[in-house]
Amino acid sequence: MRDEDSDESGDLIKDVGVSGSVGVGSGFSGSLTISLGLSRYTAINIAGFYESLEDGDRLDRSWGPELDFVLRFPNPTVVTPFVGTGIGFVRWIREVADAPWDDSGSALGSVFGGLNIAFTRHFGLQISQRRSTWVSDPPRKFSDRSKFEDRSFTRTGLGFVVGF
Image 1 (cartoon, rainbow, N blue to C red):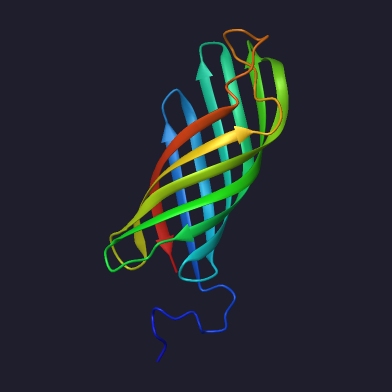
Image 2 (image 1 turned 120 degrees about the horizontal axis):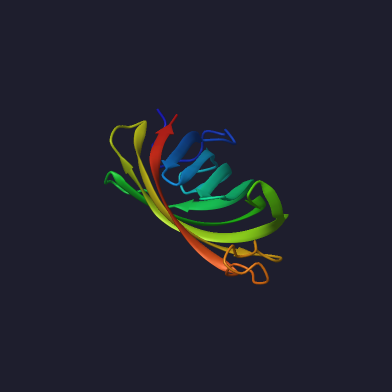
């Protein structure tokens, strides 16, 4: 019988998890993450997102992938904290009155942390916060096209997690 605290199974992937989130309001946003557990304490996350925000005749669409390294802190409670770092690429198009004026992309680096709260052995809730920094020029501001958005930004996420 295998000890739950042991990583001696010989399998490269110890567990697989899927999490996602969807947001609606003045637009649409969605993300999907596949987490490949390398051990009880580490995982590689492969993520993708799409976001479309509308404000009158202005439209801001962005999408991209991200690859993260995650440290998990398992414990005997239903709450599992995690932290990590990752790299990604974001592609964006900004339009006014259906005319694109900022059509570009940039790599970005991120750090993040959060909590997984288990409702059952295979299903739960994930709360996270991610701080990202653009490697090259960020998107331009709608209010003043000669200026760029802030070099760093923070996002908070809430979504469901399914684990296998």
